[in-house]
Length: 272
Ligand code: G3P
Ligand code: CA
Image 1: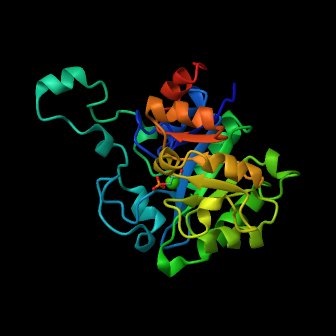
Image 2: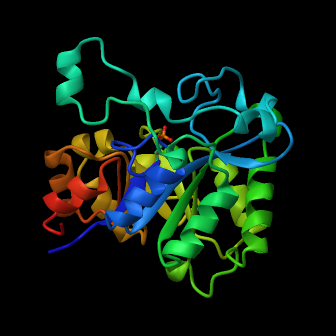
């Protein structure tokens, strides 16, 4: 039976605040074979693991990531939002995570450098799927900085794409192409939120290796995985937490399955 590789989306983000060291440490403990993270540039040019354009949702501060310095971003708490106290005491009894995090690893800003350090110290064989996000003012710089940082760690020139511990992803075709230009040996995923004209065939531009549809697309067009495979492309599917969707990915032969709950997904796949 085909077995998708489990990629922890923003870490084990169902149970720990997303993009925190604690979320990634838990994902590794839960046996995830891959980790997913989003990266953005700070005002002073550091790559940090944050999904949104602003810190408003995931921290106790406010502001646009690309307008804040690393020092300012580091002062904020990135764990509390995930642990808000419920309105009623009843909910508190039934919700095991409804208390502010006491774990410093679930509060601090996570830089890409720290995430690479965690992986090197804990499980160097895990695959890291890095998604570049795009503040307009930094167009192009995110990919250049990312590749330079990967070079410093000896991670930008794998002997074979299949063995690379790093995979770079984006919804932007321009971003994926830039990664290919900067680091031709790194595998890339072109993420898709919908089938634009021509994309449903399974064909990818020459600078993308893996196709990255959302699960909503495979529910409507399950044959897409086979069409992509015929053209030589593995499928990375996001974000898959429901049992029926997990089983669908397994049946279709999805190679990489991004989930917020690695332990539960492993259990449903009969691995846990
Ligand atoms: O893994 C890809 C997926 O993360 C893309 O969507 O919005 O969660 O970054 P988003
Ligand atoms: Ca992402």
